[in-house]
Image (cartoon, rainbow, N blue to C red):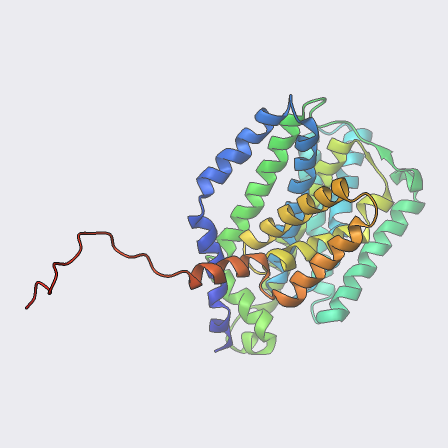
Length: 335
């Protein structure tokens, strides 16, 4: 049966768990306190990496149903504008405004999901891209939204990089937890069946509409929440940035680079890609994007399961551990 074909993909998740999740979590919590005084630039870079990671993991949630979405920038921008407008025009407390941003993204995702339910592949991608572009044009034209000039947004934690870091880390952990839980529930089999053969999944009793819309809503909530966070941390938004196609493309490239349909793969891809891009920018002033694109193309072409798939393959090729103990006596004890 086609569903069983994807079952080995859960192995990367098990490997990631054995690599020391508590150790990584402890390092992530200690990181802002170690760098805030000596290396504030690294802490600022960490915010960008964590934002990128949330977008990557949340995009992968929808990709598990086989949908190639380019609407992530739309949900990101909706979250940013909703939270900014509520906080500036209606003086709603910022945490509630951020949650409202994620909530509106969910509402729009459910509507878009129902409208595009029958579309797949490139047709679905084009429909989601059109949705993003429509929102961008509306935000650019309507004065209430700040038009092309944009909006100034109140801060989440004034002058506190540590507080900003801990908030986005909490959002990332929540996204990872949802992704991990989905891959360990019957949703995993439903998503895999839909991705493999939607018609067969429906015949087997999988509620295709419900699972696809649910995946869309989950994915959109975290994108919207992250967009709201971006608005209150960078204090200014405009339609060209928050509805940018680069956001949607970046959100889908990281899971492909790190390992699709897993929890650890999108996270690994986001960290390596964003940190690698910054390292290349610092060492090669001109043309670093050419090298960056070349590395990305090689990984996509020759590593179909991404970096995490390579790590798993290397681990499986490692010889089994040999039990350590006293050497048998010469001539054999059993004679």
